[in-house]
Amino acid sequence: MKTKISKDFFSDPQVVATVTTVDDLEFLSSATDFGCDVLEYRLDDLSDHLEKVKSTIIQVPLPTLITVRCPNEGGQNNLPDAKRLDLYSEFLPLADLIDVEIETLKNSDAFQRLLSRAQDAGVLVVGSFHNFSSFAGLGKIEQVLKEGNELGVDIVKMAMVTDTLPQVFEMSEVIAKFGSRVSLSLMGMGKMGKISRLVLARSGSCLNYGYLQTENAPGQWKAQQLRDLISEI
Image (cartoon, rainbow, N blue to C red; front, side, top):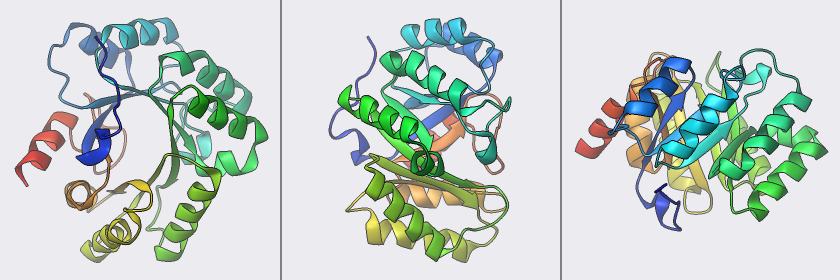
């Protein structure tokens, strides 16, 4: 049976494995140890294999996170908003969580209605922010947190370049300051990406992302490695 997300699901750091390829889907169809706690299906990567995605979700007994990333924040295949909305709606009955960019939610009534429909259905909403070129800075981080809170998302996720340890520690301080008020998922990319994912998981980041078989962001661990290391520190 599929694992359900309970109210204390985020009391410990959870590891998310991102599913982006048909090979990932084939692996999941035969695996017995998935090496993670949650599976994120990136439908922008998998838009030509939707029936295979559905059958995999039904088969695999782990919580399901559905993401159809927008092109401006790393989404593949240049999907327009209308197509993204259709995919979210189609997969909502199979989801435990969905991830939508905070910028998209801010600027689209249709996506705000999706947020409401998801939460009415008991599906958690991750409001996300990504900066693949630089460290956003504390001012921007606090702005994104404020916007996510105003939108009513369940989890605020932020991923940005971290080239120095002080930047990692600044993100850790954000969790210490705001983590008791909002569920946070914070991670770095780039030079300090791998270190950041360990430090921030142990600082209180609730969702910590790795890859299933193929890295899809700079500074990721394989999900199994990430879970093992988090458990050791």
